[in-house]
Image 1: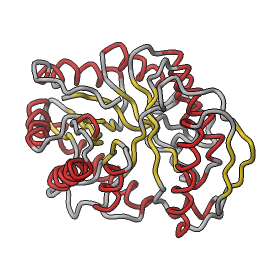
Image 2: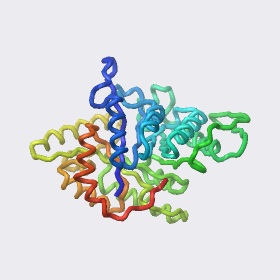
Image 3: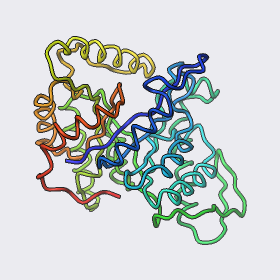
Image 4: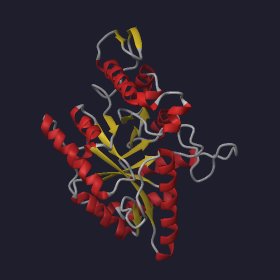
Length: 331
């Protein structure tokens, strides 16, 4: 089983305080320690207008981290394509791949938070067609020799060449944020790896992985479990006295995510088996359940994001999986 991270720094708007536990510098230190400890990857969020201080310029922060790290893969989780000029994104992503020595994972999505679309004055009903045309342009930008043109519904480009070329050839791995069966099957057919969310139950995650694997088989695409990244909230503790506080934090996180997304959430904390919440032994048991369902690539969203937490998880949980067979990476 392979372990990475999901999330991003946080700041407190209007306070000038970037030194809190989720501030940028502390988060940079956190990722640098993850790199030293051998965590495999980081997928960084992109969000806007939330009032929660989430990362908005993910590739800017990832470029800085590329210079500070040497091994950890650096991914977007995800760039919401309907909001962006696709040529500028292709240039930025290729630059990041170059600066990181080919460690970039290009996670993309259509977006799902209505408030963000409203803030950009983009109808959420246009998300699919905007996404499709943007990805068409980016693929063309990274695979076309010489200059090219594009004339579509939303974008017109004449005699352009995107520079620099990405270091990874033909391009960095594409990852698609997916949840519905059609989107999962599309990811498999169109050559994406897939990212699953942190609220889905273990049963849902196993079912979604089976759908992806099935569609890969149908189209003759070689499958390995590292093509599926599963985000799980991490809340590890060591005494029963800490359990109530961990549960309260989980309730708060689910409430915030659900309110921002206007989507489904677990009906009760008792039914919520998605997070890695518990003692090290309990977390290992939850991970083994996922592993039994074919899940091998875990991305952890830690609300505390502390160096001490990284070290404890490495020693007390990751060590239990060190002797497992390792699948070939899906880079």
